[in-house]
Figure 1 (cartoon, rainbow, N blue to C red):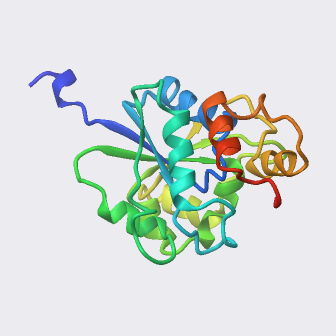
Figure 2: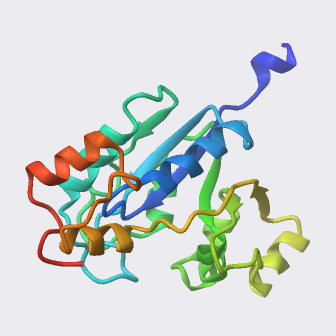
Figure 3: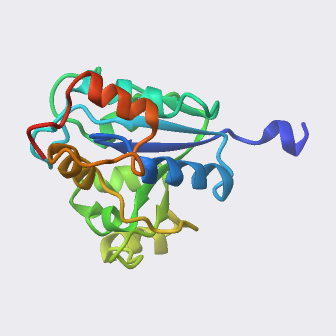
Length: 205
C-alpha cells in the first residue's frame, strides 16, 4: 500500500459557542486547512458549556449561523453533535462519540490552552487529540505544567498554528449589535442577514 493511500484523514475539531460566528473563527479554520494540512475542519457549536453562563442565542440559531458562514468552503462542515446532546457540554463526551479512524486535532487559541487543565477529564482529552494552537491577542503560547508533563512522557502533543492574531470577538460583535453599530467587518453578510432577520443580540451583550 502506498504512503498516500495509507495516510489517515486529518480532521480539525473546532468547538465553541459561536455566539455568533465571526471572521476570526473563519480565518483560524482556514489557517488549520493551510498550515495544519487538515482534510476537514468540523465546527462544533456547544450546547451549554458547563464552564460558561447561558449563551445568548439558541443552539438552533448558532448552528444556522455556522452553516451560513461556512457554506462556500467544501472542507468546512457543521457537526451538531453537542447541540443534539442533552445537558451540559463536555468535550470528552464529544470525542468519545466520534468515529474511530481519523487523526483528530483540537483547534484552540492560546488563551484556551492556558485554561485547558480545568476542563473535565482533561488528561483523557489530551491523550485523544493533538492540540493545534493559535496565538490570541495578549496571550503568549504557554503550555500548562500538568499538560507539559504528559507531553514529556509522549502521551500528548501540541502543535502551533501560524496565525495573525485578530482582536475580533463574539463579545465585541454582540456589544456592537446591541448598540446598533455596524459589524459588517466582523461577520460575513449571510450571518449578518440572519442576525437581522431574527433580531438577535439587539437588547443584550
